Length: 339
Ligand SMILES: *[C@@H]1O[C@H](CO)[C@@H](O)[C@H](O)[C@H]1NC(C)=O
Ligand SMILES: *[C@@H]1O[C@H](CO)[C@@H](O)[C@H](O)[C@H]1NC(C)=O
Ligand SMILES: *[C@@H]1O[C@H](CO)[C@@H](O)[C@H](O)[C@H]1NC(C)=O
Ligand SMILES: *[C@@H]1O[C@H](CO)[C@@H](O)[C@H](O)[C@H]1NC(C)=O
Ligand SMILES: *[C@@H]1O[C@H](CO)[C@@H](O)[C@H](O)[C@H]1NC(C)=O
Image 1 (tube, rainbow, N blue to C red):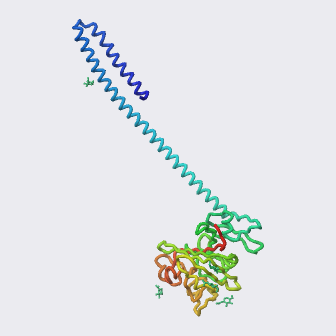
Image 2 (cartoon, rainbow, N blue to C red):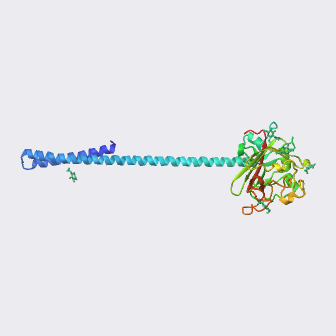
Image 3 (tube, rainbow, N blue to C red):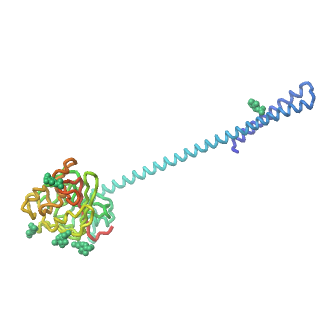
């Protein structure tokens, strides 16, 4: 029994007693009645009153108890809500700081060249990954005096299939023309966060170590496919940036095989194996054979126009010659990379 119910019981008991005391003197002063009757009437009435009060008391007790229970339950409920609220705030705070942290790391990456010791040089995103840079984004590869290579901005994919990928090409925005000349394809063009070609000189330099090529693509229905070549090399400019690939795997079809062992061609530099000028027919720079089984540097066509032209961003093994893809990324990493 709680304190409050105890107090109430005492109060009611006092009420009963005071009634008894109040009645007794009156009764005593009243004219004498047959003592037995008076005694019994009085006792009976008191008994009834006591019974009534007792039941009332019990009822009140019950009511109070349930009231108390309800109050306690409400307080517990409030406490629970409070704790839930607190948990939610804590969660939000930690999420916020996580995001903040991520942003800071990204800014650091963008603003700082990664420092380098001569013993383990940084050539690409795989070496960055092995130095524990595991967030995808833009990085600056340091110049290498020994190799005679300049500083280079790259985009690293640290997530797909184990990470460590250096992007060499991306098509997704569609505002950058890929119908460019030899020199532009040699040096690279575009913006590293948007559409770009990393540059054939860089491809040659980076694929001197045995490399793997991964091509990821997306169509206008939002479906994705990929093609991977565990062997990928681009020769130097003297050898017309010739392409060598082998060991296809993936679910997009082997549509680069046809371009294997061919020189690079651009607008104004026809190195293809055709009487036609494939670069001007397909409006891009690529390892044109005669002419294409894929045309990843073709014209970007938006939804609605993507299924009409043969000079689009095509991959015959998936959508045939007349379907221009919505998004493409070409990326490389060393064959011996382990995540
Ligand atoms: C108890 O008290 C109530 C209210 O005073 C009255 O209506 C009822 O008849 C009483 N019951 C008995 C058994 O006296
Ligand atoms: C292709 O894969 C096979 C089996 O793993 C390997 O023996 C061969 O050397 C690979 N070819 C090239 C060109 O890397
Ligand atoms: C590719 O280029 C090299 C030199 O740059 C040349 O010797 C060779 O004949 C070319 N191959 C084809 C098929 O045009
Ligand atoms: C590509 O050409 C090279 C050189 O001729 C050859 O070794 C390799 O097996 C070819 N790759 C494919 C997929 O046919
Ligand atoms: C692709 O377009 C060309 C020219 O517009 C047409 O001749 C050809 O039949 C089309 N091919 C397919 C598979 O739709």
